[in-house]
Length: 155
Image 1 (cartoon, rainbow, N blue to C red):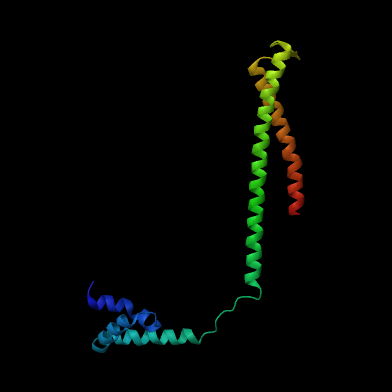
Image 2: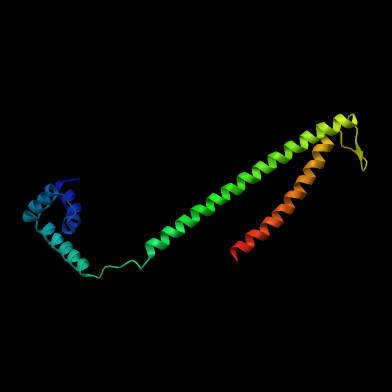
């Protein structure tokens, strides 16, 4: 890139007054000897003056306070969601541990054989299957109950 091209790239910035003193000096020196760059610098200066005369938009009254309140509200909602997720994970872990413990207790008292509705619940796979089905049914009921509470909160 030549010096002329690099100066030409800085003309709009020079007209806006955002260049440093050394860069402005370089642009002004070049514009004093280059007619094309001088005209372009004058054009950009005209645009800059016109833009400064335009009315500046103002933020609506209370926008900052409403935005802060909304951010805090959303952070609190996210934290509440995380707490719900942790509670659900803890309940799921507790349920599986309780089921596993109960299986050992049942096996101990029944000698490994507990026939209920034709199924031997003393068997590990049968117990696992039955407890999974009961857990899923319980989880489905919990989703329905908790879902109704969530719907009411948003209405």
